[in-house]
Image 1 (cartoon, rainbow, N blue to C red):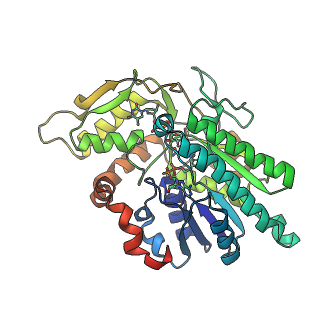
Image 2 (spheres, helix red, strand yellow):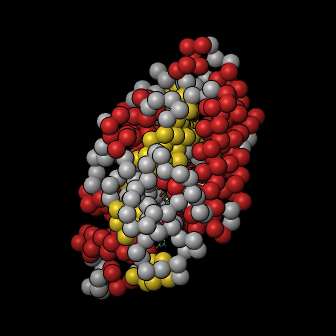
Length: 355
Ligand code: NAD
Ligand code: DAU
């Protein structure tokens, strides 16, 4: 049985990855998460209570706490997802992004290097440090072209710059110290348990509450959407079979304008949960001031991971988005706990001394 550290395991993608790994592997997972506003252990469902899931409420900037975890649960690898992840927040207050995404990644790399240096030769050779990153490090595309593993870095928001810095640190630790690292750069994720400040859950919850659906600018910015479970499957594959030192781009081949996404959500809600007053949800669409420095278009060429590791997304946007809307309709308790702030007390109620 492997022991794997997963940072950010109470977040949107980390919780999906842990649900997958607890269901489909025999690995022991040490979930290292500070539980910021974005951390929600309720998202882990049954996996959160599995004996192979160990939760530690730890800040990745806390070197001493990380050293203790490495000593207590010697891991075979680390999958690093913990980050400040919301572009709008990074524009309003970049400090936490610099701290967690850059200093936190540095601290985790150093704690990992100290542990890895003390392993025997076979352990060192088999060890993996997998850094989970974003396509936003590549900047913004015009109407044509796609990001590949060879695309030059050109980050343009405080969030994407901090993620780019963390990517560079990870590569430097590989190049300088020989730490076996992997990096994945993924496009926009959607699916269950996403914190409702990102486009898709925000639109679903606002629509259900009869609130305006705020569309930045003209709604013509393009994102390449991937279901979070497809991302989780890709992360497992890269962690297990990716070549050390390599980078893999992950994307869903689902380019949509924001307006297309909002219209799709409105049409699905009209079908699955019609408004009591008989009006269409699309009547709630509201154009608001654009995001400062708003990247125009992202699109991923995912042919390397397809060719080398055989990964393909299982969900199309049409199948995945309908399941996602249905999930939010079927999980009013998760939503109520997020909206009331109740989810922040979940750790004390359910984990007590384990945290
Ligand atoms: P999220 O904001 O939902 O979750 C982040 C998690 O990290 C939270 O549980 C939070 O509590 C934890 N965290 C934050 N600061 C921490 C710290 N200092 N120490 C320990 N834990 C801390 O983010 P997400 O959408 O799940 O993204 C996960 C990772 O994937 C991030 O690194 C992000 O950059 C990357 N990514 C996200 C997307 C996307 O569309 N959401 C796409 C590509 C890459
Ligand atoms: O591309 C990967 C990135 O995708 C990840 O690295 C980030 O962690 C993740 O948050 C996401 O970043 P975006 O900025 O693309 O996601 P967001 O959901 O914030 O916005 C998606 C698009 O929708 C973007 O063009 C801005 C627009 N938008 C967003 C919100 C919240 C609106 O028009 N209205 C809104 O209210």
